[in-house]
Picture 1 (cartoon, rainbow, N blue to C red):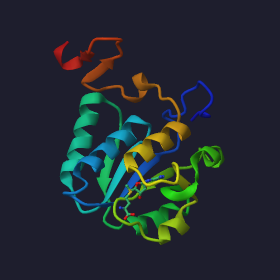
Picture 2 (cartoon, protein in one colour):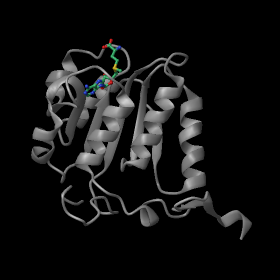
Picture 3 (cartoon, rainbow, N blue to C red):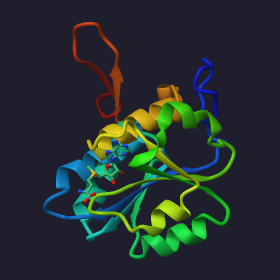
Picture 4 (cartoon, rainbow, N blue to C red):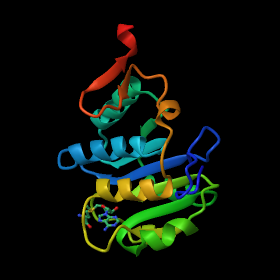
Length: 191
Ligand code: SAM
């Protein structure tokens, strides 16, 4: 891992595992936002997204399909009892809850340890009050209500920092080649 202000990539194969837990997914209402949440978790440095609430194989299919095409070792799964899982996890790992009621992210990110397995929890429907007590850090990205996707992206960018995408997302079929004007990709299935 790296300090966010350093130029060294923070996540590498030796970094403690970083998961994102999506609470209270509603299959119809949250379809797109939950899908985008998992893709954002993957793109900004999480190793895993855990879905809870209503079961939704299509979300898992989307995340697996993107990982297969664009590379990396991102994992996803469904959790039937997220609060029980969190209680267990909190005994040895760090629980970060993103909530507009929490402490300002700019003042807290530096104090959140980077040397233990960590889960970042985001809500969908109203979250159980117990979550505020289980969490080691209740973190706000501003104190206004907005989107879990925006909150997650800003938090991960500030806490994880820059990624070395060529190693993190190795092994995919498609690699985007950054370009000023054109849409350039390397497609390993066509080579
Ligand atoms: N409708 C839900 C309710 O009844 O409270 C809340 C919806 S909110 C869009 C869903 C999630 O987005 C929250 O649980 C939280 O994780 C995240 N979120 C929204 N605004 C946030 C903020 N300002 N800071 C941090 N996280 C935020």
